[in-house]
Length: 78
Image (cartoon, rainbow, N blue to C red; front, top):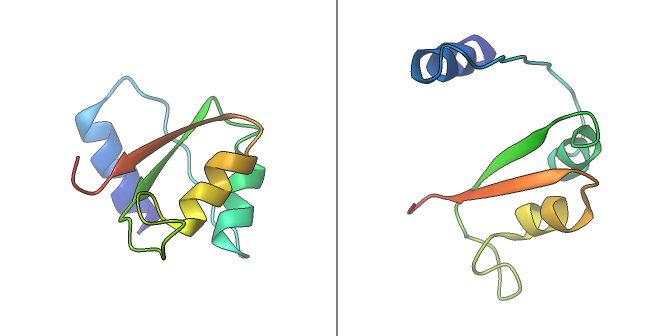
């Protein structure tokens, strides 16, 4: 899956520096913790959460609201 993600990213933007790392743990916490080391974090959102997360989703809101770095949210319908 990681190799496929790198292939897709580099096909689209050959000049981009793409790195991957397999990390186990809570997805929201792991993503949030990684933003401090990244230029930016791009995260997708399906918007399938409950009322509070209706527009973005609860995990995306957690990451975007608590991350120390820049977070870009891309909605599935974008």
